[in-house]
Image (cartoon, rainbow, N blue to C red; front, top):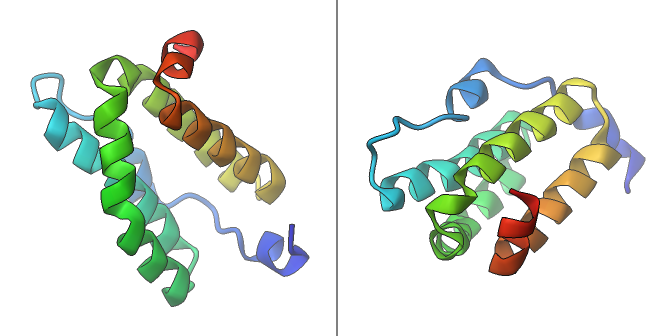
Length: 117
């Protein structure tokens, strides 16, 4: 990983913590949209406009992945966010990158979602 990128990892913004839970009665499509928006908030926090724009461009695809994973993945998604934010707050870019890669892999393979839940 680029060491310049490691130096730019910013501490978690409180707004991202709010994004870690959705009201229990919300429909899954609304929760999936909020889960996808979390990644945009994270990208915004980097202070890199290009990265934030890229995150907004891929949000629809990420939301589709979350929709396909289904409501049974919600606890997994929330646990991922807490782990990821811990890595960001610790300024551990390598651990955050591994966490993100593992998470996206699980979302792409629905059978893996249940295996890690």
